[in-house]
Image 1 (tube, rainbow, N blue to C red):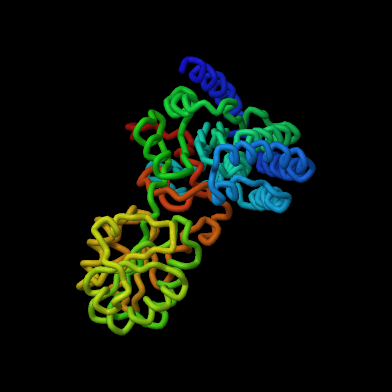
Image 2 (tube, rainbow, N blue to C red; image 1 turned 90 degrees about the horizontal axis):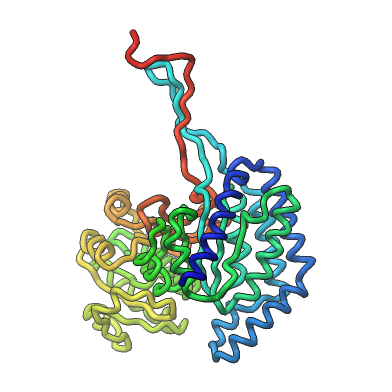
Length: 421
């Protein structure tokens, strides 16, 4: 463990020194760095593919499944997509230095808030090597420094990407230590990083539930976390039933493996017979296994009985649980009890019902007449995102560039003295 602590201390000291330069870097410098990195990725495609093949062969030797291998693989098309993503981030507005809430006070002082970088961000993620480029780029554009620790499966791929990032950063006249990767796959380095309060300002984990729970439990550094994406759609008694069926179908079937996929459908008892039989058949025809409570099973003999565990499960698969509820209050109670605070939606034509749902559902995103899979930084107009936070502090929902900054008060006066009449 001492070797891991020494490594993180060395990296942290370098990052802290680089952070002061990054905080005052111009938008032009940061955008130039992103363009240089994108150019380096394209020019170094062969090198990246070669490094990735070492990871792929090791993964095959370990017997990793096809889905994991697919997430791990870097192809020329995926490398080009990474480069295009960096160029897109370069076009986004720079949040650093933006002033807001400026107002003149009775004292004559002009008081406002200015956006500033968080500082040094530790990002811990699993096998997808493209996260290395995305995370590094978002931290750079928001004026932060990044210490990246990717999964051991993508060690060689991520190391090669970080080398190109550092070259591009230096070409723009910025400190290359603004982005560093942990140079060992040893798990002890994760423990050292999440305890490095002296050097690291915030930790962002991206990965499975076990990883995030471990970091949340053990970290001494503040964590911006995303736990489960246990999302709901509630079809209200006053819904347009055709629209409701389309929204509920899309919320589940657009993509099963995303955190914004609906996992439980709640239906008001008054309209269960009108909406559920056709919708259940539609799910079944699409290959979705439906589990339901007694009221749902009574409508379709092929529905499997749901257990209490189903209401608390994020399937990330073609499996859906359906529950009939008495009214909107029961739906809200179910969501707030079983939900993960990610994204929940109501389908209704009632303004009163939609307003009640918005006020009372305790989630980072609450939607009306839209599927939960719209919970995405790009769809929200944020551009790229580093993840979706289910925290209450310091940011909630999709975390874009602004979410990687904080604010400080700026006070302007002209000689005012407190207590002097």
